Image 1 (cartoon, each protein chain N blue to C red):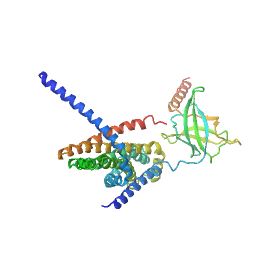
Image 2: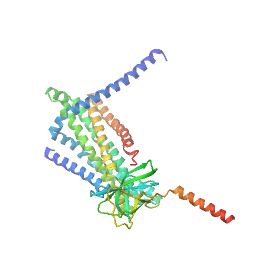
Image 3: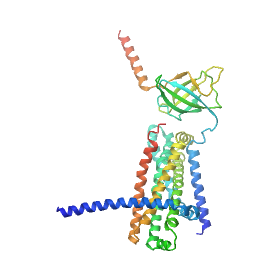
Image 4: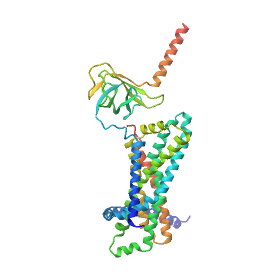
Length: 157
Length: 267
């Protein structure tokens, strides 16, 4: 085989390899869903974030409007501080509520935003005041059991 | 056991150990020398292109077919397990993550070692046995720069591309079995996959893995060929050693790289 045909085949091979990489990045991975658009940062404090992870979604009405960029522990209030990137296209009132929710029963956890009624909109660096922590299954069960026990006592009286 | 046989055994053990250490040192010196003298391989790039043809293009069929079948098997087995938990929609995640993170680089690396690595060793070993390398030295051509370096770079360039093709074919195979044959919902298959697979953490790490495997496999292959005993038996032994050593190197490196990349990866 002479050199030009080898060059052709190597060219085909390299192009195929890169097409496979692009396929992996765009179709298998989530590169396309990354918006390169402008975002603004919003902070929120939670008593408990459950299993929320960095890069987890921030949703409002089920639509992904941003991503969690940082989770850290505040050593003064003993709360978790969640830093979120929200796309500039989505504006929320300043009294928006942030909740840690779970998609499905065993699904991943995400931050749910519920818009408030304030006329002023959130700006970069703002902190969401109204938050609701993740539901911890153990607490829920123990609460349920305590209630049941209390009911039992009442019934015995 | 008399003292002399005991002493002879200890001496043999020591000699064996020190010859291994000597060989590792020689291999490092050889690979360093080759890296320094890689200028020719990059300047006269058609030499490297010919090696990409031999190592990469000719390995395409085995890589693509194996990738397709591995993906199809993953689709079947994954569905079988996931549907017990009512999570058959996550089939795409399972197929894509196992291929991109592990199976793509590792299986493509093992196939590459046996398909291309052995060929490189046999070729260089035979060139040595037929004194072609000595002839080049006589003509003041450095055989390391002219013969070894292009093969090394050809392999290093080919390997990540082959691994990417393997993974892509595997995902396609999983799609064929999962969606077309079994009937998992196509939208859930792709969207869950896209939600779970991260470009930097999963795909880039897979590419880095395959690049490291490429360096390891071709490095071992060219060294074994260059260091082969220049007889028919020596070349055949060197070829066997290439496949065994590079397969072990891939699996060991895979463990180390996985431990570095994917543990503590809660971020």
